[in-house]
Length: 85
Length: 85
Image (cartoon, rainbow over all chains, first blue to last red; front, side):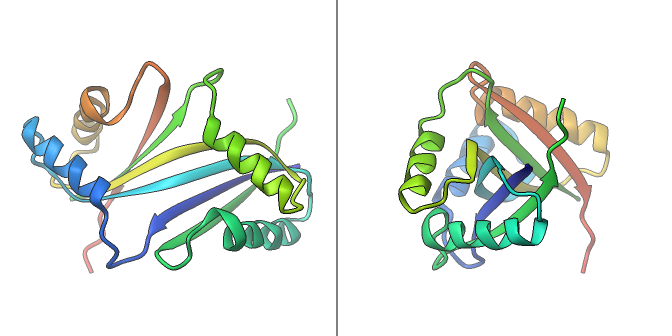
């Protein structure tokens, strides 16, 4: 079993309206230090697979077919062995 | 300048309908290995602050007042020095 974390973000140059909204709200609240705010999504799950390379391949396929809009989004896959408690 | 990454997820026990939807869609596509799918949000920005402790304190306040619904969500803050190119 492995723990999978997929980090999804908008590609450079793609407008991030949520980030803009957060930036203007933070400014309105008096927080002026934050800039270039970018938002993203996280998907985490456990996978019944022990081989990291094979897990990576399968998760890439999941991303390309369902989880990520590869036209405007990029993704990173992190794979960690699940430590049984 | 520091790079801030805020990772926001639902607290344990809070229903994650997006995760459920992803799980059932993956099953329909023939991917049966993924289980316990949890979704989350990412917010990344640069901050005009060099002291990590002070940055952490400010970002915590931003989370508590605007960015995170602390009733149902938990958050993690990662702070990294920005390497000027």
